[in-house]
Length: 190
Image (cartoon, rainbow, N blue to C red; front, side, top):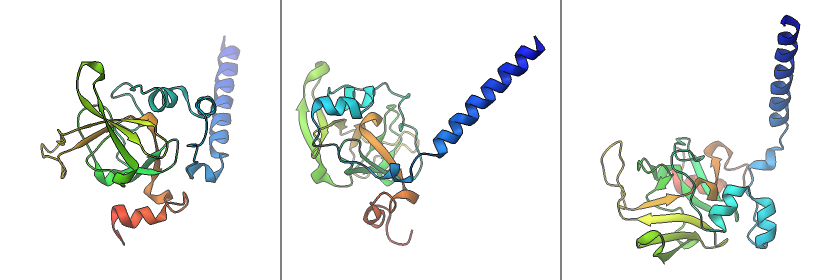
C-alpha cells in the first residue's frame, strides 16, 4: 500500500509539474488579440470555445457568478473575443451584483451596436459588437454600484458575458499592440 501511495503521489506531482511547464511555454504573442471577424460561422466554431460560440454567435447567455470576469478587479481592458477590438475598461467596471461583468461606458461607443430585444418575455436593449456582430449582452438604465450604493456616472449598466471578451492586463497593453488605449482610458502618467 505504501509503495502504491508513493507511486500515485509521484504520478500526480509529475502531471502537475508537466502542466505548469506547458503553461509557461505558451508564446508571449498569445496576448495580442486576433481578428477572426472575417471567418465563417463554421470556422468560428473551430476557433472559439463552446461557451464563446454559444454566446457570441448563437446569442446565448452564460451563467451568473461563475463566468470568467464577473469578479475580476485587475486593471486592463476587455476586447471583443472575435475581432480583438477594445470594448470596455476596468476603469468603467463596477459591482452591479448581477453576476456578470458590468460597465457604465464602453471605450468606443462606435464599436457598440444596440438593438431592441423582446425575447425572454421582456423588452431589453441587446448589445452587439459592430465589427464582429457578436452578441455581447444587454444594456440597462439601472447602473448602481452595490458596494457603494452610488449611481454610476452614466446611470447605465452594460451587462456583458465574459465569454464574449478577452481581458488584456494594463501591464500588457503595449505588448498586445494596444498601448494607445492606456492613456485614453487610464490617463497619461498614471
